[in-house]
Every structure is written in C-alpha cells, then in structure tokens.
Image 1 (spheres, helix red, strand yellow):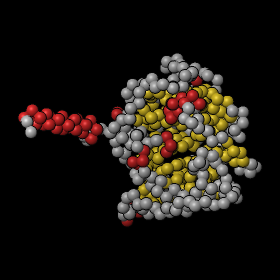
Image 2 (cartoon, rainbow, N blue to C red):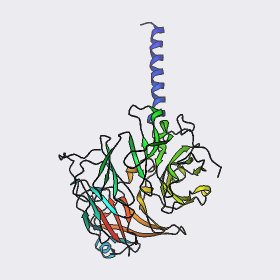
Image 3 (cartoon, rainbow, N blue to C red):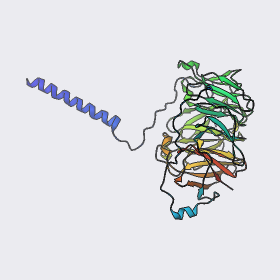
Image 4 (cartoon, rainbow, N blue to C red):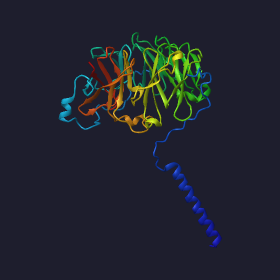
Length: 418
C-alpha cells in the first residue's frame, strides 16, 4: 500500500472518530439539568381569533375480559414503629391521621359537586357514596370497559369515553342514553348542565377540521366556536361557573413564561393571563372569580407550583399569587371557602414534566383559606403500610370528611377532618 493511500485511510478514521465524539457530546453526555421539551412561540395553527386582549362508547350486553385488579396496598415506607402508631390520630390535627378504607375494588372518576358517585372497574357498575359514608348502587346496569367518566355537577348525568373512541351520555335518573360522535373528546358540562363543551378532532388528522365546540348534552345543536389547528393539546376544556368561558389556550412567550387566553362563547376579547412557567393546567374555583393553576419553571427545579388568581372579566390576572405548595391542581378540591390539596412530601427535580415520578411518594394534606390565602397542614394519612399517594380527592360539603382514591390500590378511603 502506498504512503498516500495510507494517509487517506488514517484521515478518514480520524474524521469518523471526531464525528462520533461530537455526537456523544450532543446527545448522550450526562446533563446537570433535565431536558426541557422545546416549545416555540409563533407555532402555525394557533387559535386565530383569540385576541391578545387588553394588556394586564358503547354499552355491551356480554362481559369482556378485564385485567386483574391489584387489591394489595403497595408498601411505600417501612411499617410504622410502635411510637408512631401511638401518635396516629382518628381526626386530622396536623400529624399522622388514621385512614379508613371504604371499597375493596379499584374505582375511578369519583364525582364532586352535589353527589359523590364513582365507577367500579371490577364489577363495571356505578355507585353513590351517601353523606353517612354508605355505598349504594347508582344503577343496576353494567358499563363494560369504561376508560373515562365526565360527570355533570349534580352527578345525575355522565359522559363515558371508551378505548375505541365511542362516547355515550347516560342519565341515571331516567336510564336514557345517547351515543355521541367519536370525534368528540375531553367533555365538560356547563354549570346548568344544559350544554357540554368538547374538542372535535378530525378522523384523518386534518388540522383544519380540529375545533373547540359546544352542544346539547345529547350531541345535538352542535356549535363550533374556535378552530384549534395543530394546537389542540394546548387547549384545556374547562367551563367557567358563570358560563362565559369554555376553555383556556396556553401559548409560550419566550423561556419560562406563558400567556393564557380565555375562550368565550361569542368571540369575546378577554384579557390574557401571564403565568410564570409552562405546562399551565387550571381549575375554576366555585365562585367563578378565581382560577387555581399549576406551572413549572427553572425557578423551582421544574416542579409543579400552585398559583391562584382572579380570572373574571376585567380582573383577569389581579392578585396572581403563589400558594407555596408544589403539587398539581388535579390533586386539589374545594369545599365552602376552603381549598384542600394533596402535596407530595418531596418531589425530584423535573417532576413537572414527568408527574409519574410522584406515584410512589406519600402525600400530605393541606387546607388553604380562599379568602385570606392562609394555609395549614391538616394531615399525613397513614395506614398499616405507611403513607398514601393521592390520585383524586373530594371533601364533604360540611368539611368534616375528606375522601380520596390512592394510586397504589385505586380504592376509596376517608379521613375525618372534624
């Protein structure tokens, strides 16, 4: 082999090694901070008519096979010591609080509002929890393989979503059901239950056919309000208690900030809300004047941070205040003038992007006064195997009992608050 050809081969090998090293630096070298998914402003297909505003399934007759239900409590921390067992209180007083298990089976989507109803995934039926803590059958009918339940506030109606995209509205008072189009998803009932809001997503991924809409609960009288384009994942269907707004739309404004646009029924030009973080998720407070939300940013290690603000008319953004709690709005509920939240004892950096990391972290229960903003630790729920990770939480109207579904077993539990 001549000298010139040898040099060419060695040069080629050197170039390959350099390229491999550069690819390792760019893609595989360990980072000090978690990767932040790119979200760029000005994405094509945003809701076109939301202005900037003034600056601030099917019911089957035959049973289908369902996966086995895990009925064992998963141990999250070591068994309580004798001293800790003596410290457990029957009523929440800011420390270890005894938990009562109410169901043996895994349940999901317990309703709030006037009634506490839920779906039992084991026997495929719906049940009602009375004010005395008794469980009654809501219907004798079986609803197999329900994936999600969207309740009306009264608990008398629900829209069930199925894995194949089917949707049905069922009235538990009359036993009447209606099939809704498969293009509909993410339902929410208006306060008077006369209308529903939803996302209409194209069967063929045509962006121009993705809309935010409203209709009668049975799917009739459809009215498309705003086109969503390819931004439907940034639209949250959430009907305000005063029925003026049916959804929010989040848009990134540079790094670590979002603008939240409120979507009305008639193209109103509401003010936008500036939030100090990304991945906004909101929950209206019962009076319709405030909205609770969580966002995350590098300021708190990308952990979810709770905020509350005015969101009615010209007051949008007034009193935008952090609550000093790191959790998600899905783990919060209201009763009277109080907010109750399940807060993980500790969260790793980046939990805002990956909520699943909190699935095995025990929660503490906090109470926040919505008028003063004062918060206090109510309880650390404990059982024979230590703490619980709360999946869903509701509180009785009189504030005496807190009910929750835990992540590990999917069972319904209660603790006494008074």
